[in-house]
Image (cartoon, rainbow, N blue to C red; front, side, top):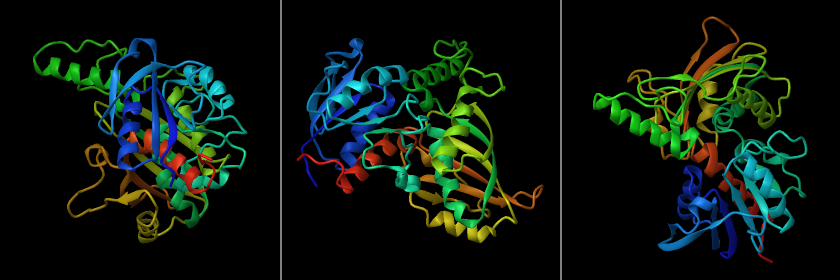
Length: 342
């Protein structure tokens, strides 16, 4: 495998940006030259990669000369502004924002699920919403067990989904409350420590917040099921890292047997079954934090519906929900010969 790709990370100082550097190292990703890009307020700071300090530069239209792969994690506005320049400079772009996910000609890829959606001419690869990825990692292996008609989903989303500032807010407020002081919201509109609330994104005319809307539509695209019925409630909980999901999956006919379901999930790439009823041991955010797999358990029949099963999922939002999925896309492009230094 070549070892001299020029790689750019836009948003290098954010929570996902820092995860990129860890994954490049742990996966032995073939980075030859690494460009760390961020906003003007971070310019001149340094991050360490493979024991070498790298100075952060301001991300701009001229930042992508000679770049082979550009990873973006700086928000939709920055992606819309800069990705056209990166593509014009010849870089393959992998974008963690929502900017291009739902464009019909752009694939929305989770490599374990729908790599066949990638076309030879594709050079822009959005990374799906973190919750949608974690959910689909578990739903996709069940598609072969029968036609899925509906998903009923509730989420328990951690501070990591809101980035480094939200994680810091949770820590700061928790310390304050434990010291007998009030939790003062700065990043969020209401107290976060020892609290939970509807996901902090705008509500649309149908009563769904923006996060719920993303999960509905992006899950349909990833699963290649445009007519899939999805109802989802997204909730922010005072957990530092890793999202959890309660999901009920309704099939068109009789629900598959539980052992069949467990077997399908146990053999799914990137999924780990944790389903010990005797010990009451099922997935938690702490189990999933720092892990590449998506954990699933609480596998049971929905006794209120003969065609449904219910499960509980936990996955690291910063890893499989974001940076890891992006790196896996790049790894597949290299494996497929789409990304070379020639």
